[in-house]
Image 1 (cartoon, one colour):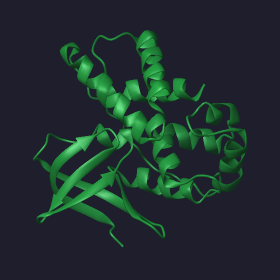
Image 2 (cartoon, one colour; image 1 turned 120 degrees about the horizontal axis):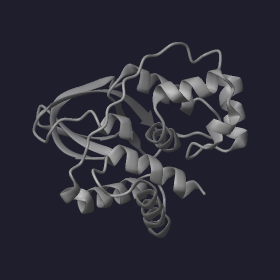
Image 3 (spheres, one colour; image 1 turned 180 degrees about the vertical axis):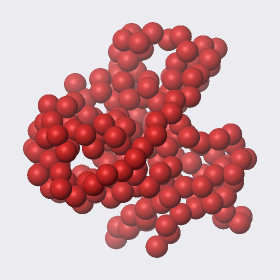
Length: 201
């Protein structure tokens, strides 16, 4: 079991990083919340990880905090939620907000999260309310200068595509998100979270 990785950040996108550990490169899927904590390329990085094993593949998922990893593991324990959906859920809402919605039984708020329908929201409340416990999370955002907006839009598009959305739906969602919030001083995490909400409808 690979529980964590410490190495050099050799590549990053909003949903995946490449970490060089002693000359071995590990591709690790991440949620947007973890992406916002990463440093520059070629800088040291430490990720808590979860190794998801299937008959035909093994995939590493990485997290900046134990709270993220713990909630990810709780999510994939629910019928109908696989690691890809759990990654998308954590990309669309903070750990603290998701915990509050589950503990409070807020079905309406849960169904507004990309990847969660009414039946799944009800299962989350029933199965996780007593298990979720207390976790702390910190949220950060990286402000992107306006002259990088084109690059940020492209990264957001790649993130949605990697989460399983088709290109037409992803592009439309990003346009709607931009119209909603404007294009000045884009924050990539916020843009992707907004786009995820639009892509659900």
